[in-house]
Structures are given as structure tokens and as C-alpha cells.
Image (cartoon, rainbow, N blue to C red; front, side):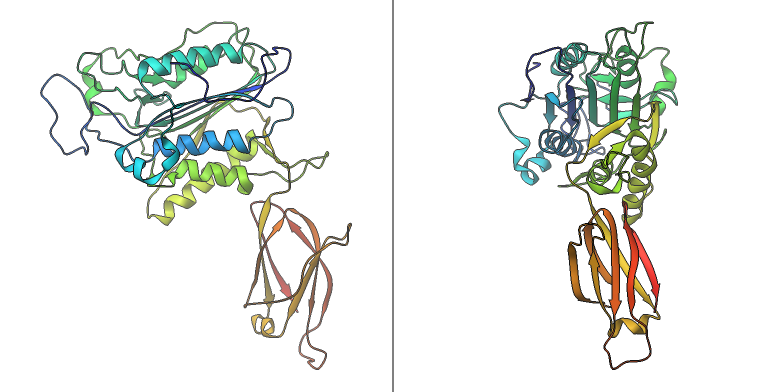
Length: 392
């Protein structure tokens, strides 16, 4: 099946559009519930894997963001193809994972959707192509990435017949008709099972023909995990990579306003902030996960925010004891719009404010002589956050 989950734009090939293919596989037909359970002695190769708990959730979260929040004035959303195979656990955690318009991430469905997505992307060279794939992943060399699909471990197929070769797809999308701007998000482990040492050749089922005529401008790949490492997830909330990506798209990975006063998420801002955010989330769980880049990471805009992002603001007074008597006012120096006033420190002043440049006043009661009022300190509230210590 290659049905489109969402069609937003029209069929006019003269109008550049963004075309997305989003795939999430948590349920695997031929794998046991857990890696330690026995499997039938019928020749299937499971690589010691069981069911996953977060990839389908993550793919749905990303597809929903594309549908509701993605904004690119130069190439608005045209189509979103979504294929999901949720696990039993996910059915009970995320109601919207089920739907008559959502295809399963079987090999046949993925092949059809991949070809249809490729054709749509090639309708106009100014189109934008987006591929997001989440599921169990492996690698055979230090540079490749292979993501397993719903029917992986079919005993009647070659080991990797029901899998996607991301490197082949990336190279196959670099042709004379290809969309010049492309983005790839690979949300999967990149482990190399010892089993493959015994094989001379492991053909992968879902690939693209590769041409030697590519002229793409930018095609970064954002891998959720470094080579030979695992990707982590949180049931009900998706993978840590997906959570970090959502944080970056909302605020954490937004660049300061450009010369046209636009707040952008770009290749470079994702390269800089996404790995940091993934690592921060992993450390909260006492784990380590390192997201790494690949592909052709030329700096281009990915997402244009319609409004300034909300930026965490934290203001501390020095000495800290002064906060017991202080109150603050924050305003926009150009529009004179007041964001807040008469706000007390507890002992720090913590707020979220729309990104921008502001002025801050800190005042004390008239009958105290230990601290001085602050009339108008400059506050630059840019992502990922603004922290200030103010001597009084």
C-alpha cells in the first residue's frame, strides 16, 4: 500500500512542496515478546531481539508534528506517508496509533510507499524530502544503517530481506531529478550482531537504485545512536531521540532571529543541539546515548517558526539573600510591552518568555539601604535558555 496519510498541497508540480515518509516499527510478527523467550526451530534468525516499545509512538509523534506544526513557506507540506506497526504495550498507551488510514510497516507496504514518496519528491527539484524511520536497527559496517521492518525474521526469507538500507536510499535519492533539499532521521540502534561474521553477503530487501548523476544541495542524516550502540526510549513518550528532536523543533534547537527576524531550525542548529539534548535525556536515566550526523550536512532551513519560541529564563541575584526583598519587571524596550511586573524572587526568578531582547528592572522597598535598584538591564532571551546573575 502507498496511500497517503495526509495530503495538504495540490497536484501542481510547479509549486514546491515538502513530501515526508514516516515509518515506525515496534511490533515484529516473527519475534518473541522478549529476547529471552524461545523461538520456533524453523530457520528464522531473530538476532536475539524481541518486541520494541517506542518506535511506532515516536513515528506518530513526528508525523503529527509535521501535520500540525511544520512550517516552510518555500515548500509547504504536500504529502505525509505514515506506516506504523505498534506493539501491544503501545496500543494501551497511545490511542491514536490505530486508524484506518495508517498502513502497517510491512516490507511490501514500505517498498510501495518508498517508491511513491520518491516519485513525489522528484516532481520538482525545489521540493523538500523528509524521511523518518524508527525501529530495531543494526549495521554491517561502521558507515551503514539498516532498520528492520514488521516482518523481519520471516523464516522463508533471507535474513535482511525485510529491512531498509538507509544508505542505499540516501544514495538513490541523489539523482538528476531529486529534490535538492532532503532530511533523514534514523531513530534506531546501530549494533553489529556477531552472527554476520559468518556471512559473505547480506542483501537488504528495501533499497533504491543508485545513479551517478546526483546534484542535491543538502541531505543531512541525523542518526539517533553512534555506531555499535543502542537507542533508548520511554514508553508512552517515544524514543529519547524523538523527545530530543521535539524539544529542538519547539525551542531548544532554534537559532536566534535572522536578518528577516525569522526564528529558524536549521541543519547547523540541529547538528549543534540535537546530540546535546539526546545525551541530556539519556543521563537522566543513568544511560549514555550519542546521536551523530552523516550524509551531506549543508546548512539550510528545516523549519520556520510562526512565532518566537518560549525560552526558559532564570535570574539570580548576588548576594542571594537580597532576593527576599526584591521584585522584578520585564518589558520589551521597543514596543514597551510589559511581560511581567512586581514578580518576587523565590529565591530565583524563573519564567518562560517569548524569545527576544528585553529590559529588566529590579527594585527594593524604599526603607532598605542594603541593595540598589536596577533600572534597566539588558536580557537576551534566546534558545536554549537565558540565565543571568545580577549584582545588587
